[in-house]
Image 1 (tube, rainbow, N blue to C red):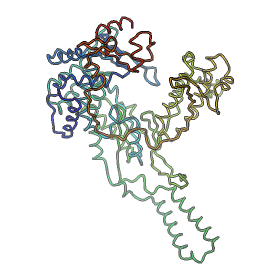
Image 2: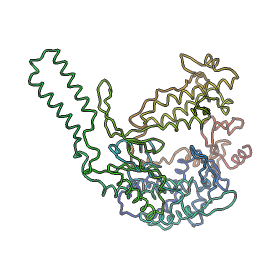
Image 3: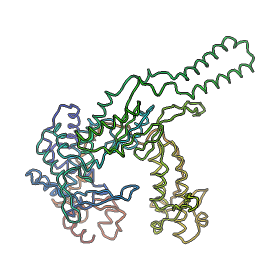
Length: 608
């Protein structure tokens, strides 16, 4: 059998030829090495040990299990089991989002299919798309907005109603057929789409949408919405008018520029005859004239000879900037609604798809986006730098960090009945008082760092100081509640060199950890690798740890030689107490997997 990474890289290279149609993809599902790679990709995921409708997880991975799956795929008897539907809370909402949990075997097959689809489609996806893609993230989307949205007059904030639940299966299959000429593979895709879900022990069919929670849902969503990306790119090509460089000069800027040039010409003629005091005075006057000139945009923003459009999408959220009129934005919104309905059978929400003036604030990926109106001159590294009127500004919305404090249970907000003013009060978090000191401190630090890392591109990220201050008071009160004392005594006990410090014991000795209070400085670039459309598939090492364990045919517990080695897996190492021998081995190796014989595996589950 071919090395799966060689196969994926081959698919990746062939995909660059847009006229190429892929055949014989289904036969890759007969390759056991693909399932070992799939298991290696997903076994460490949080949901890998969550049981599906049949109660099965990835625990018990073995060569016979892989052979059984391949046998079912070969004789076409493989049927994906209905997903077990559960509900998870939506952020900042009382509503819940449905999530389907596949069975253990289906997770493996889906991961193999995902790798194949990603190899075929990833190189052709639009550079404007950032969701569910290698080396891309929310931050790469925001960084692209900063680079390309400058000078915009209007924003169109796109909202597609129930996007992932509304994908038309027939439209999706037709899109797949454009590049895949393999009926067995297409039939397998139909099986996944029509597998349905179980809720309260009742089977429900799926007539539209992608199976949320499945391994293939993200790549299928990008394949489907790539049609929207292509449409906007074509729309942009017909919309663009004129050239940014040749935009009309602002008359006021031209007048100020003439003043500067006239002043310089007049003084150049008499400069040598001036005293040092006069030279100093006139140099100061020239500096003031130039500063006034810098305050004015050099180009006209309302230039009818120039139009442009920019677009960024992350999953089902997208935003479009327009250099043009409000009528242009309204026409675009109407055209998008028609395209989505006629070509993709999706509905653009008329109410939620907002048209926002660029000097206002549009919301995208939790950030507020605006276009700067001023050309304020600021100092950077000792030099005066002119701010660009028309530059993109990213802001952290006040309600975002406020809602986080409420979500964490770190504050209580009361409204004055007379003045209606809000009074914020830091409170202790009762759910943390039974944890170790270092765990409480680490919890607060991770929450602060997590919010800061996400909003580090915001102009007003310094507001994180207030967030951290309230979290600090909440932490002090949590410690005080844990030890039934006053915060004053907690400060006296834990403060070292003016910082809250927890000393804790490790195998290598005593260490200390301090409360994180910043600094909260805006970052010019996101903390992500350079966006790269082509995924880099590293060569798959056949002797990787999991595969080597299965091939060794040796039980790691009893040492027995067996052809039926199975992989025992646990969710978290910290859930093990070390009471049993198998727990001691896993803790010693610091791995969530253990290769065992069937007898030892049965014994383990007898003790679980």
